[in-house]
Length: 80
View (tube, rainbow, N blue to C red):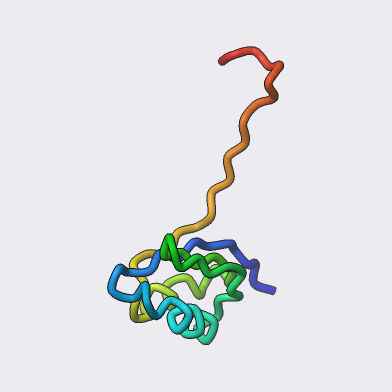
């Protein structure tokens, strides 16, 4: 079974007005769409690792990046 990765898709300025259409095209290429954020031009979702390049080929997509998680240390930890 192929492992899925969470990705952040940035939509081009020209495609902002059609972001829902871009999301549908991404879904057809294998993205499980989780959120469509029209104000920021971002679509989040997950897809198998091998499908990321196919998502880049969708018209209106500016970039496809892996999600990065950041965690701050507890407030009572020593400053490093």
